[in-house]
Amino acid sequence: MAVFIAITLPLIIIMAAFAVDVAWMQLVRTELRTATDAASRAGAKTLSLQQTEAAARAATKDAAQRNLVAGVPLVVIDSEIEVGSSSQATTNSRFVFTPGGAQLNAVRVTGNRTNSSAGGPVSLFLGQVMGVTHFQPTNVATSTQLDRDICLVVDRSGSMMRGVTSTSVPSGICNPPDLAVSRWGGLNTAVAGFLAELDLTSSLEQCGLVSYSNAGRFCRNPSFTYTTSDINAQLDFNYQPIRDEMARLSSQPVRGRTNIGAGIDNGILVLTDPRARPFALRTMVVMTDGRHNEGPEPVLSAQRAANENIIIHTVTFSNEADFARMQAVAAATGGEHFHAPTAAALEAIFRQIAGTLPVLLTE
Image 1: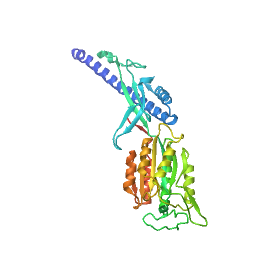
Image 2: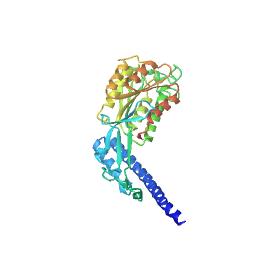
Image 3: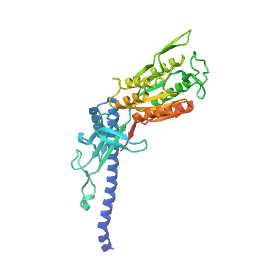
Image 4: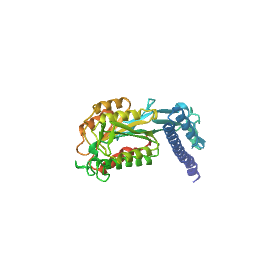
């Protein structure tokens, strides 16, 4: 037995040392992953809120130091923090991070406990039995902030007074639209759903409102004067002005022809206004129930929007809409086209567009 113990005891000690240090290494790796994840999230969130790279770097360092790795705060230096842009080639593909760029929306952090890092390598408890005294873990985390400045561009031409699936005007052409059955009523509900969805996101997103038809004076006693397109609400974190404007527009007839290009042009003005944030994604949602029949070609306006890095999503409502043209408008900016055959589908589409996750851990 003495001989057996003498032979096996070193093996037992080595196995015990190995088990203890493997558990310790796994714990440290978990702590390092938590610390780098927290640091990148804090950096991306601050980048969104303050729109400066310097503030994002400071927040990243602060968040890292509030997390212990192997018993000491994690220290990250400037060379371990990259601020850049992160995007998807397609809706279901992985996000790809690119350092730098004009529209910053992501922070990548490399957390190191190596010989060359500020915190140095991590000591092992019993590794010296096998001649190993330290290990050097590394972890990379990237967080992407999907902030958007959004402009809703809505159709207030006369066809919006019609029923969703008919050409009749339930309320009469010189009365306010019937909010229960008219196309305008469906849009009014969809815009309310869109804003409610934005209220649920954890990020602060600005939204504005533009409406369009054509200039003219309509009806008598009283008469109503309309402009071709109005900026009804500028970009703001407070959505109440949009709600107030939708209520005002709903209280009178909506009349006129369909100048989609003018609506897009005013949407560009909203999204390039000084209120727009430099690093936010610029999104326009253009809705129509009919065919463009007034003013310049909307695809040309969409191309101008693309030059300003604005993505346009188009939404057609009713079978009278010009699907091909609105698909071309969206394609000119890399956006998507949606069709809503019913009021419920219109609200669902608006909520879907509004409901993009604002902060994603993408690596």
